[in-house]
Length: 106
Image 1: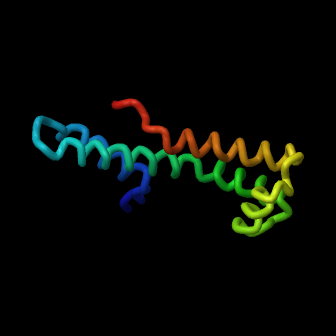
Image 2: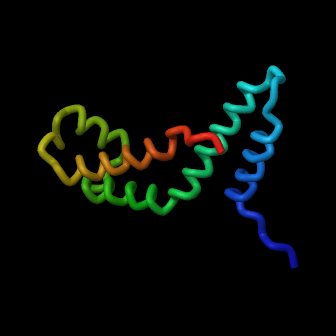
């Protein structure tokens, strides 16, 4: 019986393969962009539980408003003094910053 491959493992192999083939050829920038994208996807996959938790916290703090309604109410000042929603949004922003921040070269 074959082991089931997981997306994250495949992304790691693809990234490592691209990194190994980087050289003086003119596709270096494209390869680096692909490596960066793969890294983002890897961090996103690894953070799925945390992302779901963030989403749940924002939903609870906002009364489960639709995203467009939440944005409208934030813009109108409805949540200006709501520290619970502020904290939930800040935690989510920090997590997303860690996901989308380019990692160091391996």
